[in-house]
Length: 278
Length: 209
Image (cartoon, chains in turn yellow, blue):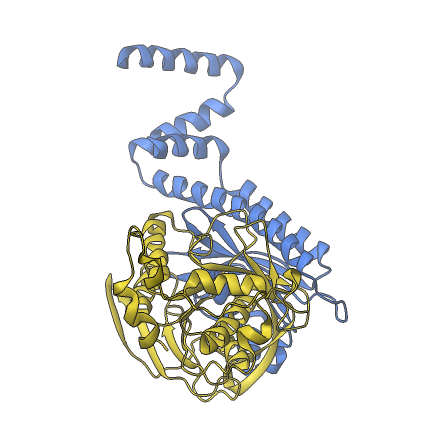
């Protein structure tokens, strides 16, 4: 995708829908009576879909990750933010783990790494925001965010960015967490928020009728890619999130015109507890 | 003004021992509940961007306190920077981690679970539980339980941090120091002395009003 999917957006009615203009809205016309998994991603490989992973970097040449289209790093030196191409790989393994999971769903999607973690805690919220701005500018189709921030002073800007991504058809997929303190961006309605379930089926997906967590994906005892070409077993919403990102890459590979709203609807209708697995 | 109040309170309360004991009790309880070999709380030192062992129960209790390492390294570093709880098994497979762990703690954990310690202003540190019993399947309910402990540890850590900040404000011979010392003396004084001191204070208050 996505040049094709984005081309016509300037022509859409923006704030109101004049009489008779409804026919000009290019909705996919082939909605079946029931959205099945076969319709949603049957035969799909993620080909043509551009996935961005905002994390600690991705280890190049990891067998579970395969090719990485591009790697950039965001740095903050004395409050000066810079974004540059980078070949240092992954500083701690977290981003590689996420990339391996996405690749296991969508073997032919393009993966780009944006390193926003790993250079220390201080200044990390600004780095995250700069990385997200870059990802939206670059018009990725799917952005995996297995991370969050609690810093209230950045919530406003993050919220704006989440909405901007939504309108530009970049689907942000963010890890929820179970701590009493609020964190972001997973709590925003314009992203897909993901928690964990305990099933071993990577395609098991549960829609949650009581947000803010919208979906539960596999997050318990997941075999993940680890530094040095290895694998390890780990648990956490960090690993549930790329399961949903991978599914989104599959769905968008087959249906590149879907908006984030429609994509979320397809996820809902194909969720295990909505009858999607039947 | 909040500095002044905190400084006076610190003068009355003395050192940060109480909060430290609360933190220690939290890691002891976490270790007990999860039948783990060790549990620890790491505090983020924002000035140096390092994580510091602030309370340790079980393995490493005698040697780890005060040890520091860069804030975004290791599994504790992941948890701090991602603000996401994590459980990792088979750590011994990772030779780099094993070596680092062995060097810093003297023993290599098989697995560990860790949660970020969060407040609304940011992350304070990380709570880690090392080596649950082998062969017992891990569940997400345990993850939730660890989150509850994390919340308690975060409150203790925040109090400890405030007490330290207040004590730092007391260092030297500033007006805060004099006031805090006065508050501490008043607290310790015999009834008669105390009443006299309070009377003097009330007179002072009228004078300054």
